[in-house]
Image (cartoon, rainbow, N blue to C red; front, side):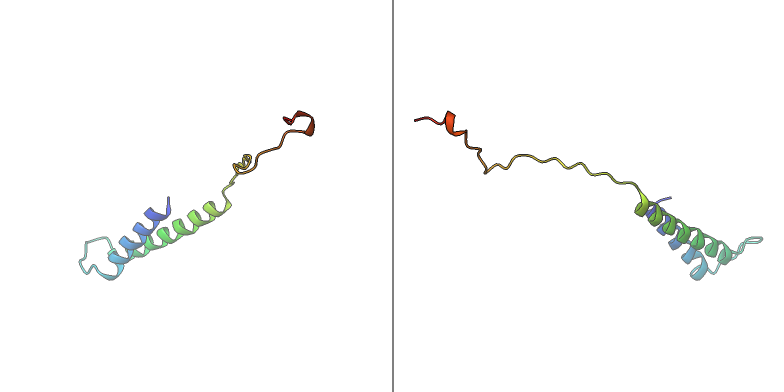
Length: 79
C-alpha cells in the first residue's frame, strides 16, 4: 500500500465516521470509518518506514573538465 492509497483510506474513513448519518442494519458505519482510518494510518507509517530504509546506490561518474586542456609533455611540443 502506498502513501496515496493510505491517504484515500483515511479520507474515506473520516467521511464515514464524521459525515455519514445514514444507517444500515447490521453494519455500524462509524465503526467501519474508524477501522479504515486505522488501516490508512498504519499504511502511511509503513510506507514511510520502507521508503526511508530502502537501499539506495549512487553511481558517480567523473568526466574530464571541459575547460581543462592537458598540455603535452615538453618533448612533444612544436618548436
